[in-house]
Amino acid sequence: MEAINFISNLAMPIVIIVIIIYGLIEKNKVFDIFLEGAKEGIEIVLNIFPTLVGLFVAIGALRSSGILDMITYVIQPVLTMIEFPSEIMPLTLIRPISGSASIAVATDIMKNYGVDTFIGLVASIIMGSTETTLYTIAVYTSSVGVKKTRFVLLASLIGDFIGIIASVIIVKFFFY
Amino acid sequence: MLNSIWPFFIIISFFYAIISGNLDNLNKSILESAQDAVNLCISLLGSMCLWNGIMQIANKSSAIEKLTDFLKPFINKLFPEMKENNQIKKEISMNIIANVLGLGNAATPLGIKAMKSMQRENKDKNTLSNSMLIFIVLNTASLQLIPTTIIAIRNSLGSENSTKIVFPVWIVTALAAFAAVFTAKLLIKREEKNKKWKQ
View (cartoon, rainbow over the protein chains, first blue to last red):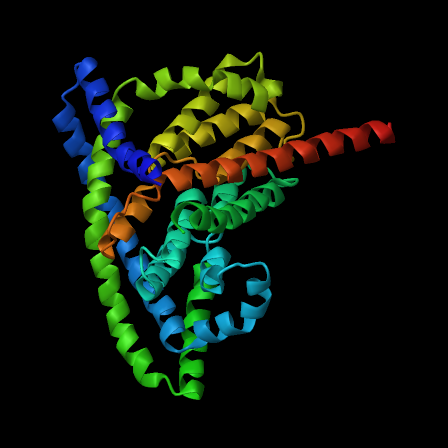
């Protein structure tokens, strides 16, 4: 487990250092370029801020009204049979549909069940390893005006499904 | 999509809160949630600026182009129809590298460029070609090396070690991407077999 945490902690600094050194080798003004990009970062966050406020309120309402607990309670028997934590279910449903909504749901889950708990780790890994599948497919198919998408959705959703199952297994395997 | 989901969530929450007697909780959470969004965005602001800045350096250098060499064997295997077409293979590789580095802003335009080039080679303009299909499937697998957003969220919620998920994320991503591509390849093969039968 030590080794896995070590690799995980190494990844971010290495990427940063390699890119900076690469920039220096090519004689770029790295700090000026950094500032340029960082400014864009502000814009990105400002742009998603209103979306997040709206979605946080909606997801918070679902949580506080007790409806999420009720749904979790209802589906629990089925999910415990396959040893899947029912608390994760809302995230798996929203993840392929909306990026910002899944940020709101994941944050809600981690806030309620803890960031470094079993459930918090599964939610984190699902978020890190899956993509907003429906949106991605829509962007790329519409960019060329293709109508018949064959089985692109099926294949992508099977990938997401395997990712979700694997997230649960890997947390059990690595951290518990 | 959100235009229907969002009001739906709020309306059912309101009615359920009345039935279950959770109205005071609901009130508290409405104000709290808006504040939570602010807290998260402040945390995201730091990490987004940092990563966007770092990735801008990668963007301005020839890193993306250089790294495409590593992908050659994979690309030839995944896109057999494009074997002779170096330009398209390069566009596909650049999109994948941009995804891996987490250059969201660069990845999408590069991807659309690759899609347009593949559409030019496509015989049936209304249907996705095999290459386009595999390409989209790869893009729906989150190939990002450092999952920056979720790390920032974990950080804002006070995680002891917000980056410890990185290695597990790689493994899960690889498994999910493999499953998706494998399914797509399998279905392509089956379809071709069926076509031969019909002839």
